[in-house]
Amino acid sequence: MDVKDIIKEENLVYSKPSLLSDKITHYCPGCSHGVVHKLLAEVIEELGIQEKTIGVSPVGCAVFAYNYIEIDWQEAAHGRAPAVATGIARVDPDKVVFTYQGDGDLASIGTAEIMHAANRGENIVVVFINNAIYGMTGGQMAPTTLLGQVTATTPCGRDLERNGYPLKITELIGQLPGAAYVSRQSVHTPAAVRKCRKALRKSFENAMAKKGTSFVEVVSTCSSGWRLSPVEANKWMEENMFPFYPIGDIKDGQKAEAGDFMQQNLKN
Amino acid sequence: MGELRLMKGNEVIAEAAIRCGCDAYFGYPITPQSEVMETLMAREPWNQTGMVVLQAESEVASINMVYGAAGAGKKVMTSSSSPGISLMAEGISYIAGAELPCVIVNVQRGGPGLGTIQPSQADYFQSTKGGGHGDYRLIVLAPASVQEMHDFVGLAFELAFKYRNPAMILADGAIGQMMEKVELGEFVARQTTEQVDAQYGSWATTGKKKSRAKNVITSLELDSALMEQNNLRFQEKYRKMQQDEVSFEAIRCEDADYVLVAFGSSARICQKSVELARAKGIKVGLLRPITLFPFPSEPIARLAKQVKGFMTVEMNAGQMIEDVRLAVNCAGERNPVHYFGRLGGIIPTPGEVVEALEQKLIGG
Image (cartoon, chains in turn purple, green):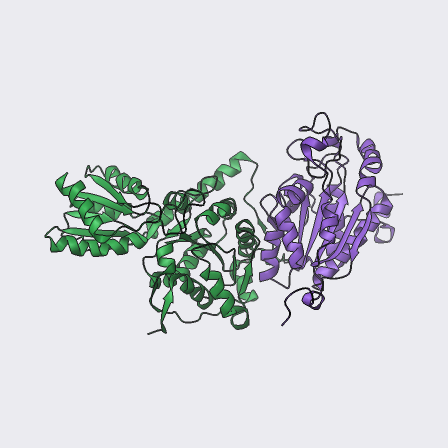
């Protein structure tokens, strides 16, 4: 059988999403970013919103996300992606705007921006990659680093007295009335990938329907930062990350109506 | 003649923004410029022109909202006062690096630190030499009247878009708070999405069309050879500004033996000082830089051939004096260049200025 006989439309069972560029990513083997990028490209393509989706990339490993998905992008300063996204979404309400941020970016230096954007109920999607470490700068402690976890700046393990507690920022976001949908996902198995894809699709649909802020945390691996092989990293994540960062939806609905707050606020 | 009104400098910034077709304002309250956002909120321009006005959670967020909206090709601005501008410095550097147009108003107060809420011109260095990290310049306009607070909003947008560079209106608490007669401009319609797309679609994030490559707003370039090219392109832009955009006002300089150099509020005071000195028989003129960057070095160099000396009058410890000295000395001249100023929010009096002039330039 000739190759030409095999490469036929009817034999096609899987293809790269058309919005994913041919550029080879700079991500390490076993990194979750590539899978999440692919899911985003699929969802944007599926919803037919390529011409109106604007991505906001962070400072961190995903700073070059704009090289890999064929849409218009803005690259934000460290932690400021939700403010940049607010600026775009407010002046261009017909656009679908999403941020893509790591744990250092979103949960450390950018806590004010994410909290207030979500609290205002900005119609944006936030994709939060939590791998409990700073990847780009060489594996330092992140706000989400687990107690006892060894990093470049916690060589003896994260210590409670010195470093405080790992931050469950997704649960905090879930408390905000401006948040429509808050979910924690992972992409370590085909089933998990499918669920994550669903969560992302719902988030983009929410943004299109102006339901408020949708926030998807993806508990991710950083095999380089963790000094583990890709397979070991997946196992380590399941054993250590999932118990503290449980997978599943935290809030599913839409941002609160003003009426929900009238009784607690000013009475005329 | 346009509509005449008695208005505060800060209020007129807001009115001018609405009238010149500004798309969005993002800001955070700080004295002495809070009236800018208060006026905008009271005017509810979203009902009239569709302009977005949003109170952000911080100056850091404000300037990054400006980045996002400017990256979308919109006419967008913010305003603050000195400590707030320091917080914005990171974002301003990113905006300059990503080559985005926007307008930033700094109604200066005294520093350093929390300093005072009284007027000052202590942010001259910060505004004209960059302010944040990296090699960049802002276009800096220095209004000396409420009318100029109005006029410079439109002008700043024009220059910002012409060069795809942030432009700053460097005012101070005195001009922000004082009331004067002002002639308001006509209403200019905001650009439609189609117009923005047609004009700025080649670089702004207007949504990727099949007909063009994706647009990416970024200041990042890890390849040093390419980054150097970016830096050189920026420098070329700043040279072009220096060549084409210098603006200044020369008052009674034609026959002057001595020239005062002052901008903003200080220049208003020096106008009176010129009169007082001339009444005493001293031939004094005033050179008022309107653009602080690009700085009017050439007009100063020309005057250096004619006058006996210069004195800068600044509400700071002597910052612009460095640029005046450079202008004089680089022209091969050796005229004395002195400084007189008050600090900490104190505004010099016209008499004080004449006294200093007599002491430093004539008596000395």
